[in-house]
Amino acid sequence: MDHAVAATVDAPSHVERLVRRDRLIVVLALAGVTLLAWFYLVRMAEGMRAAATEADMHAAMGMADMAAWSTADVAALFLMWAVMMAGMMLPSAAPMILLVVSTYRRRGGRHARMATAAFGGGYLVAWTGFSLVAALAQAALHAAALMSSAMVSQSTVLAGMVFLAAGAYQWMPLKHACLTHCRSPLRFLTEEWREGVAGAFRLGLRHGLFCVGCCWVLMALLFAAGVMNLLAVAAIGAFVLVEKVLRHGPLVGRLAGVLLVAWGAYLLTLSA
Image (cartoon, rainbow, N blue to C red; front, side, top):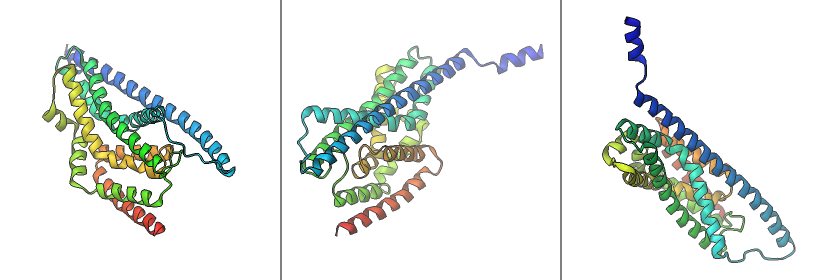
């Protein structure tokens, strides 16, 4: 009899089994979207390398290759940034998304998975908005001949200023405030909770805006390192994950800020 009671106590409830299943589905979905995003970026980087090789051949023959980008070019650039942000930021958002699906399920929500998808959609909408701004900024830099067609900065001054700005921002109160929200999923949900699928979308959008506020200057480093520099993309994504998840993430971020400022100052001395 005692063994039967113990087995009943230890056995997970129906809700807990649903929570575990939902969390597994979310993990697989996030992994799938992230892998697809990186597959797209790798294919695009290969295409960019081929185009850069052709551009170098044209330059060697005295043929300029700084033609103005069309609307279709800018639209493709926007798509590239949006996919890149999804691949970079979804892993760091995983703890929050897993907490969201668990919370909706435990509160008896019949549409827990739909609400979770809406939360993820709202989060990505925030980064899609950033992607549009980044694409327009890159197009403007290209038009000013500050970035090459291979999406690499052609100005040491520009690169130095970007590194300085990214490093200084790591110490600013706005950065700290946004990072605090990103590092405290439970506190964020307690303060900002919204019921229903539409509420989940607004919740995800708000969380995404905090993440954009936390990381947007770091993403601008790609203008200096090369937008299609996948090593830089992976390094920034990993750094964001460290800042948000690890216990001493904020300290790592501030130390990195010092290094970024030092490197930016060094680049500016080269251009003097």
